[in-house]
Length: 259
Ligand code: ADP
Ligand code: MG
Image (cartoon, rainbow, N blue to C red; front, side, top):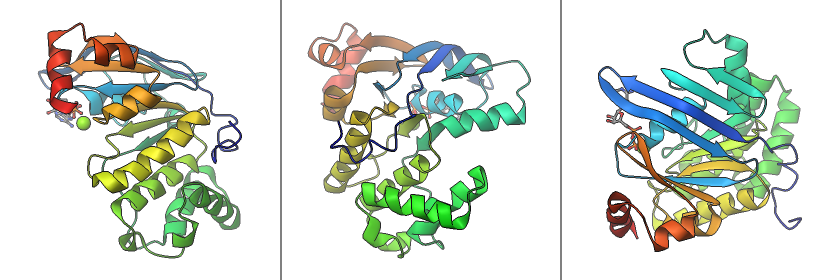
């Protein structure tokens, strides 16, 4: 455990994530239909399913980038109930506890790598520039990119940029992390570097929900596998058990397409 480069980062990152009775429509399109998922503190849930099944929308609801129509989201001690008016302070408190990494890294191209990781800490947490940059350097070292600190993201590979995005999210001290297909835009050989960082983070005890088509990662690192289709959870359980013997025909079809 102590060998993990993230041990220190995650001392307090032990929040579970509870999604209960979540529904979301876009117009007449019911995208999430009464979804409940329970993610134990420090565990990794892999979320898979065909394109359009609602995986991204589910993650976006967890940190309220989308407003759910029904249901509750609980991260640690913070609960948000759909339908009730959400105070700005509650929204900020929730978002602060949940870091998110997207398929496209969304780094600021005109900032150095260091400023990309430091700036959100100054904005969101009110840290001094000095403190934020010190923390940024520590995290960049942990993702293996300290030597890139003073370059611009454009000089970095896609895999490096995604690791910078992970460092940026971690710098805000989240208690859970959401990953939405973090390696789908990357060549396999650099995707591996990103998956290695995610594995270290999992080993260090970070609570994670990971949308991915990387079945080996889901099997080796995932504690729990959730299979979605058409806004429903069609199957969930132990990743190895589901991959070895899926109970649903649609799971079987999906797995044979990605394995
Ligand atoms: P997945 O990530 O599993 O591919 P998404 O959550 O992105 O699925 O999308 C689920 C469904 O919701 C799709 O039918 C998609 O077109 C629709 N959808 C997603 N976001 C929006 C949006 N902002 N406005 C309207 N429809 C959306
Ligand atoms: Mg998606």
